[in-house]
Image 1 (cartoon, rainbow over the protein chains, first blue to last red):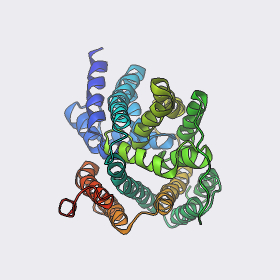
Image 2: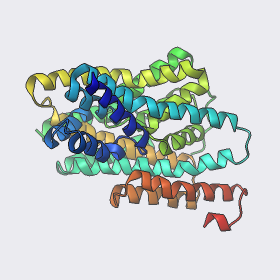
Image 3: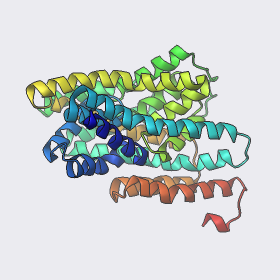
Image 4: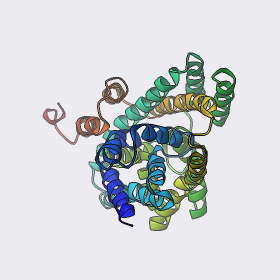
Length: 174
Length: 192
């Protein structure tokens, strides 16, 4: 039981320092889980990260997989709850604050100032993903380029691009 | 290409849940691209600008930006129930899939051998994310100074590998100051 509570506490702290989301908090997660608590070894940490990438959904769920490995289903529940809830409560509070301040003349421009930072970091995430896929040769880069243009310039469902990428990967990368 | 913005649709509680269910289920390699597509393009819950502003707020807060946005968008339409439904929808399908993957991992001691397929999908997802950033920047008609901030953030995160909290801490105040100055709310001195 104490282990579950420790997992809950550790991930709750990670949740509140995770500015920038999963990829930003990963080094600190590694420090906490591998170096401080010794719950996982290096290789397992990397493997679990890869495992989480195979599932769809927000990358922050890498925390759930780590929790599972440390203490089974209870660990998964504690890690997921700890990782998601504190930051969600904060977001809830900030949403209320912006609602109360909605008449303030500076609110919209101030919020607008965050837009370029957010888009810039999305672009960076895409580039980082593309770099990672480039380690598997040139074919992935062609898929990246085609998918970029398709999403940017057309309204086709990007699911086709993901499916196409999966098929090309099965044919050319295995 | 100027196009009349479609009318905004206020989602029902069920629609909020199923919309986020789709975002979570299809979001391979991250959900940013799908969230924008479902919320802005397919279901018209928010305009491009409203969505970008909420996402910007979600970005500087701790936690996943799309997850934070789900809380805020859910609250905006249906209060606490909305926030819970949007968040539940976003995470429920991926969590079920993850439990399956974990069981597989426990039994066979390694991740399922789907690496080549996943690598191909990841390449497609990378392009989706890049294309989404281009699309948002284009539709919002950002001014040159906002574009400069955007590129600085990209450069710092993707090329220089500066830690994201540091990028947000430095660039967000500068960008907010520029935006306030553009709106005529503060003088030139404060905006550097």
